[in-house]
Every structure is written in structure tokens, then in C-alpha cells.
Length: 306
Image 1: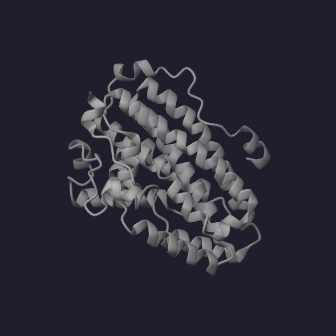
Image 2: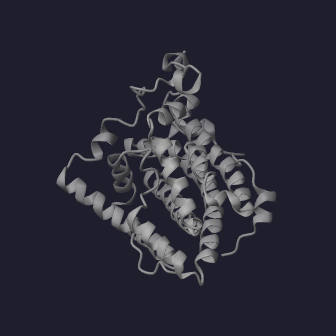
Image 3: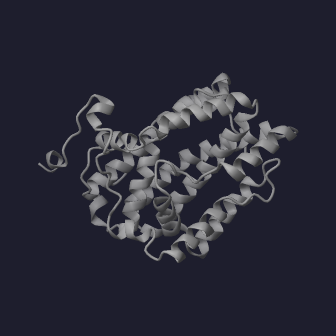
């Protein structure tokens, strides 16, 4: 699996949605679990600019190849979130995309600022920080495209399947960059391998955790992967990441699934209550009103329905 940054820069563009049958979105049903996953995925795709802000204060910003990739990656991810939101709107879920993004960010409170500071400090303490970032990027992109594939399988919604298949093509390119870059950094670099393994064992969290609660992460994991095929897909992610130098035998995705199962077994309503009660709606943050955070006022849902 090779990756050319020059070719990527030339070919990077917004998601091609030519021919997507948007008019048919509401013709096919989506289960509550499907809708929960779509809201989760949309929110995380829309969170990419904040994640990028964390990276641009680290050692990673000194590498022109990394920053060139990040510029294109950020733009492509923007259109993933935009189009997932469009599909939900056309299905009949009423929200203003920009208002929702602002509310998700406002609900983070001071957590985002603290995270930026700790990431910045950690990166400048270790010259091999980029190895950690690249490896986590590979895991997250592979997890994301695998999750989209699982949602295609679960939902059996033809328009959603078409849209997600197009997004998956982007995510595969992103994964190729991260994986190959991580491999290059880790090869013949025992120090980087040690710190990478240490960070994955102690600091790694599944995609979305932090923006989403542990219960939301568990609900997504068990809805998409709590069957034989899903478990095999997560084991395949571990196996692929384990091929990176120094990461043989790593178990991250499968461990996350098993821990989610354990929490659900201990509390049978855990996770599923969010799906069944449609608790994925974003409430106004208690301490950070949207107009104070952004200088803008959100569009009331009632206005969208008129």
C-alpha cells in the first residue's frame, strides 16, 4: 500500500455526490440505531477542525508533508459531515447543521482547551510524538471506514449505502497516508516503538470519546459490531495495526468491544436506552450559550419546520 502526497494534493477535492438519489432518502426506513449512528458519525466528522487545532500546536506542524496532508484531509472531512447532515435533514430530522456543530463544541466546555495544552506539552517533550499521532490516525481512519461499512450492512438503506461508500473511498486514502507514515517513522526506531506502544496502551480511546460519552461510544460499538461479523471486523483492525513495527499483538478495538459488552451486561439498559429514547439530540449547553461561544444566534428548530 503506497501513498503519494503530491498525487493526493492534486486529486484532493470535495466529496463527489453526483448521482446520489437524494429524493429517495425518505422512501426507505432507518432504525433508531441507524439514526443514532448517523448523528454520532456526523458530529465526529464535524469535529475534525477542532482535532486539527490540537495537532497544529504540536511537533507535527513542523513537517510540511504532514501539514499538506492535514490541509486536504480537513477539507475532505468537512464534506463528509455536511452530507451526513443533509441526509438526516432529508429523512425528516430537523436541525440546523451550523447550530448543531456549535452546540456540540460548546458542550465540551473547558475540556477542549485543556486537551490542546496537554497535547502540546506532550508533543514537545517527545521528538517521537508524530509516531503516536500517525498510529492513532491510522487506527481512527480504519475504524471509521469499518464503521461505515457496518452501518451499510445494518441499515440496508440504498441511498445511505451509496453515500457512505463514497465517503469510505476518502477514508481509505486517509488510512493509507497514516499507516504508511507511521510505518516509516517506526521502522528501525526502537524509541518511537516504545513510546507508541506505551501511549496506545494507556492513552488511546475509541473514535469520538471525549466529544461523546462512554455510554454513547458503547452504544455505537455494540449496535454496529456486537455480532460475529462485527467482532471479526474489529479483530481485523487490531491485526492490521499490529503489523506496524513494535505493535505486534496489540488489542485495542476488540478490547473496547469486550469492555462495552461487560458494561452492558452489568447494566442491561446501558447504551440501548440512548438509542431507544432518541437521546442523541443535542441540548443547549448549561454554561456556554451558543451566542456567547460563537457570536451567532442559532436557528430555532421551529423556523426549520416552517
